[in-house]
Amino acid sequence: MQKILILISFILLGCNQIDTAKRPNFIFILVDDLGKEWVETYGAEEIETPNINKLAENGITFNNAYSMPQCTPSRVALLTGQYPFVNGWINHYDVPRWGHGVNFDTNKNSSFAKALQNEGYSTCVAGKWQINDFRIEPDAMEKAGFEDYCMWTGYESGNKPSGKRYWDPYIFTKAGSKTYQGEFGPDIFSNFIIDFMEEHKDEPMCVYYPMVLTHSPFVNTPHEPDVKTKYQKHKAMVRYTDFIIGKIVKSLKDLNIDDNTFLIFTTDNGTSPGIIGKRDSVYVRGGKSYLTENGINAPFLVITPDKQHFETNALIDFTDIYPTLLALAGVENKTDSSGYSFAAVLQGKTNETKRDWILSMGGLRAKLSDDDRMENWFTFRDRVLRDEQYKVYTDTLKQIVRVFDLEKDPYESNNLINEEGIKLIIQKFEKIVRELPNKDAQPKYNKTIDSLYNIPAEELNCCGGPKGNRKTNMMKLATEEVFLKQLMTK
Image: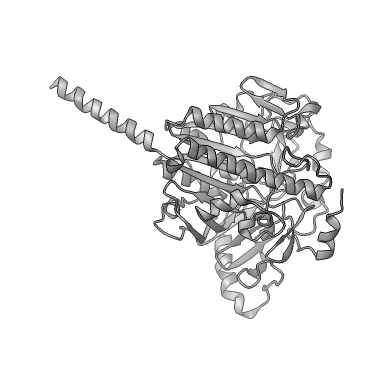
C-alpha cells in the first residue's frame, strides 16, 4: 500500500511539473509616450515600423484599448488591475525626484508580477519604474515581485548623473546604481531581457519591459547619430524602438519559445504634445496627459502562442491586463481588481470582451497634504467613458458635459450633448457614472524615510488641479502649417 501511495504521489508531482512547464510565458512591452500616429500599422504616415507591423500581421490588433493619460496612473493601473479611483494613484508623482516618503507600497498594492511569481513564474523587469526611490528602497523591485531587474533609477533629486536614461545611462541592478559610460540605455535594457529569457527558457517566465523610449529628452540613437532637430530625433527614437521589438521577437524564435509565449505591445499614453504626426491624412498632435483619443486610445498588439490573427474592436483597458495574465497562466485572481480578463479573445474563443464600457482618467502632478502625504486634487476626478461607438466626458461634479460619436467623429470635434437624439445614450452613461464611487481613493502607502531632497510643498502645490493653467482636458488636432514648422525646430 505504501508503495502505491508513493507511486501516486510521484505521478501527481510529475503532472504538476508538466503543467507548470507548459504554462505560457509573458513578454509585456510598454513603450513610453507614443500614440497611434507613430505606429504604421495604425495608419501613421510619417514613420516606418516594420517590426511592429509584423506583430499586427502575425497577431491580434486591438482598436479600442484605453491606457490612462499619463505615466503614473497608467503604470499603477496595469500593475494592480485597479482604476486610479480605486488604487488612489490618480495624479502623476515622480517619487525619486519629489520625495516626501511617497512610494508604491507592495504591502498595500497588488502586482501581477508578484501574483505570477507566487505561482512559480520567473520574473524580471527592465526600463522605467519611477514609483519608488531605489536609494531608500533598494529591495523595491523584489517586493513588487521581480526576481531580477535592470532599471533606470529615474531622476534622483540631488544626483545629477541619474537624470540620464539614454547615453551614459544611470542604471540600478542588484549590483547597485552606476553610470554606464558610452553605452545606450535601451541596448542595456533589451540585452538584459534577452539574457534573462535565455537563462529561463525552460521555465515559465513573465518579463515586464517598460521602455524608456520614446520619452524626452529627444536624442540621437546608435543607428542615427547625426540627426539634429527634435522631430528628427523623435523619429529616430521610434525607429530604434521598432528595432528593439524586432530583436526581442527574433530572440524568442531563436530560443524556440515563441510557440509558448504571449507577447504584448502597448504604450502608456499618447505622444508628447510637442510632437505632431500624421495618421490617415490627419495631422495629430501628441495627446499625452489629455483625455482625447490621441492621449489614451493606445496601440495594443498581441502575438499568441498559436498565432491567432485578427483585428478586433473589443473594449479593453489597462485594468484588464492583471486578470488576463493570471487567467492565461491558470492562476486564481485573489485581488479586488477593477478589470476583466480578455483571455478568451486571445485564445480565439470570442471576438468580444465582457465589457460594455472602458474608462480613462488621471494625470498631471499630485499635491501634498497638510500632513505631508501625496493626495489628489479633487474628490471626484474628471474622466471619460466609452463603448464601441460613443464617448462621454464627465466633470468633477459627476456630470456628463460632452458626448461624441466616435464612429462618425473619431477626432472628437462635434459635441452632441444638446442633440435631441442622443438622450438615451446620455442616460445609459449617466447610470454607469452614478454607480461609480462619489469619492476617489487616496494613494495607499506607509511613508518611507524622506529622501535627501524633498520638493518644497509649495512648489509642487502651486500649479496643479484648479490652480493650473490647463483649461481643457482635450487636445485638438494640428494643422499642416504647424506640422511643417516643427520640422525645422531644433
